[in-house]
Image 1 (cartoon, one colour):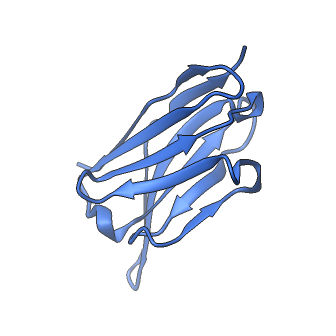
Image 2 (cartoon, helix red, strand yellow):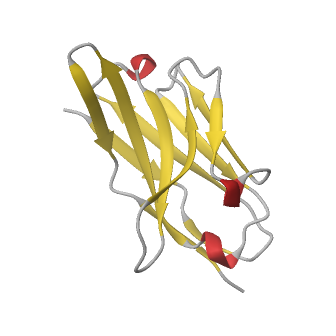
Length: 120
């Protein structure tokens, strides 16, 4: 059974840090690009950060550039999002995503999300 389980969310003060984790199982982790999306209340889900299947390239949305870092650990089948210098506008549910393109088509999976609240 495919599973993506996020953890590490919580309440943090502005300027603080959190480290999110996404534990993957039920598929070949090393074949999938991984990413973190976020969805603020009443808004669309948007890409925050992505990393290629081999971990050699990353991409970040403008609002998080320089503050967030995505990484993956092949041995643990886990992707991380290190979030520093957090701002109130970072408050959202953060979702882990796995995706893969093949000649047969597209596959993607989603976690259930973890809440991040940035407030004083």
